Length: 234
Image 1 (cartoon, rainbow, N blue to C red):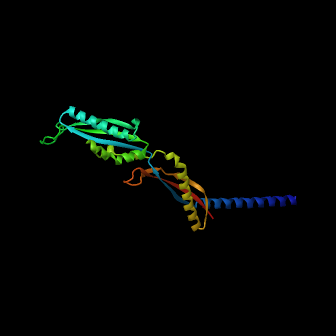
Image 2: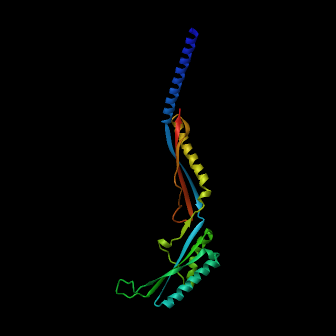
Image 3: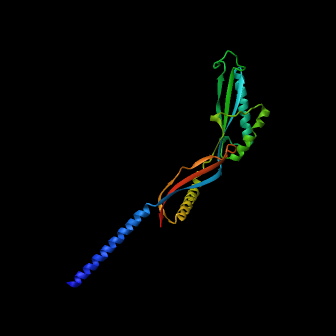
């Protein structure tokens, strides 16, 4: 009977010790989970646009419709020939129906307009051959020799460059942003005499694609920021 009491006491003592150990571990774990650091990791790439849309805008003016029709047709044909002679494909050229304005019907003063009709014509070039189109944009003044003045388009008719191959660089950029975030977190942990633990939460920001500057719109900056929260350990 005495031996049984001793065994029971030992079992109880071991149980109490284990409970205390578990409680301490729980407290330490709870305290550990309260210690976190949130950092951001940035990844950037400079890429070249792989698509361009170039609205070639031109104008005509005359006092009768037959004259203006001939003028708009000749200018349209000349622009298309200029494009095709320099390597632009038929599938990349779209001739938009011209917009005709009757200046007599829309005038707001008593002064008679010099020409009754004015026409805005647009030929849209959409291509993946960015280098070719960019070179032609720089050479568009050659059309002046044929009496065609290509005018600066409105906001709706601006030249647009875009980058459409984002998926090919996404994995590397996400990995880089995550690595940069971890580096910042590790530096914080070292400065606070702690060890960097596991990730608590992580979120990936939206990818942004913007012009590098206003002078080279065919060069794009791609940017992403990842926000990561790490546990800190003693």
